[in-house]
Amino acid sequence: MFDRTMPLMLVALSMLSVTWSVSADEPAKKPTSVLSFQVNDIDGKPVDLSKYKGEVLLIVNTASQCGFTPQYEGLQAVYEKYKAQGFEVLAFPANEFGRQEPGSNAEIKTFCSSKFNVKFPIFSKIVVSGEGIHPVYQFLTEPETNPKFAGPISWNFAKFLVNRKGEVIARFLPKDAPESAKVIGEIEKALAEAK
Image 1 (spheres, helix red, strand yellow):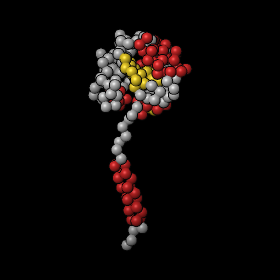
Image 2: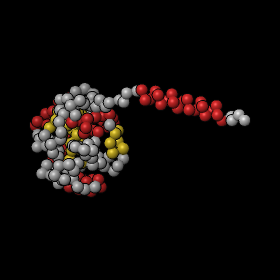
Image 3: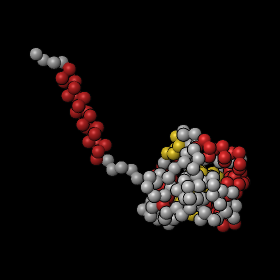
């Protein structure tokens, strides 16, 4: 007896195999910019970093119990000063260095808003060095993807400056205060570039 569903199943299977073979042959796209990534904000909601295209970014790995934690104040001041010109600070809490960010995302959010009145974006806690490193920080620290400013994160509050095109154009040490002439000079230079 002839089963009428058989030809339909064969068509469906052949379409599936064509779809699979096309996608299997395509090389995986490698990210070309930090703007290629999706991250979770401090409340766990997904954010495409591409939303910051055309803006100058200062990406910082942060911690609440570090000697550099008062830099939140400087980060907020710089953010307020340059936000209208297309500047953003993106904070990524991490607990790799001295276990100085032990809190939950909710605790980090409360700490930053109550202690430093932080208004710039803070993202969910991630790993920025070693096993389990988040793809954003893998991109920032590997020579293949960031040849000029690669290298492992040494401590909390390391900073990467990203231009309006999504290219990393400077890297600052944890000890470099956000409001220092060194950091401000590079931010202002990047902001002066056309969108």
